[in-house]
Image (cartoon, rainbow, N blue to C red; front, side, top):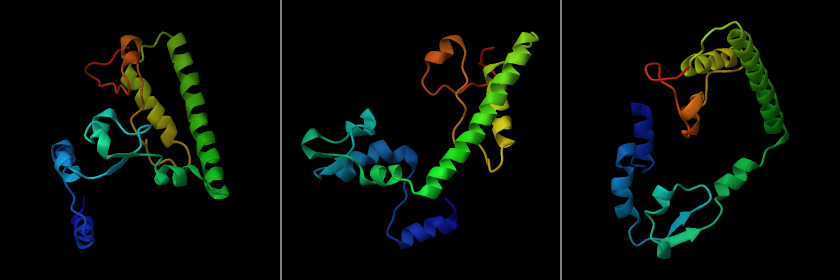
Length: 153
């Protein structure tokens, strides 16, 4: 966080803590308190921090509000999906052509190509998360992210 953001949060009574401290500090913070959890979206690791007798289970109102879209938001999603679909079609056509020509393409190469094709699309500022590009046994790894030194072709 920038120093300005830290000062703003501090003035608002928010105490930012390192992400790495979450699991070691959470038990003490919630000890003896009722804690709202949404089992459908909460990780097992976080759910296990809250004793069953202190769990208040339900659907997060935040999720409900995020799910409701006005006309402008819905149209924005449609347009973004069309742009991303165009980039994906370009990727598949490029991969097909290059593979037929005998070129070897690595997982990293395919991911980098996907990113570059998305960046050519209007309004794209970058990937919201790394492209999951995998071959063979790497396909079984959830949210696998290839690295140049260890990726497959």
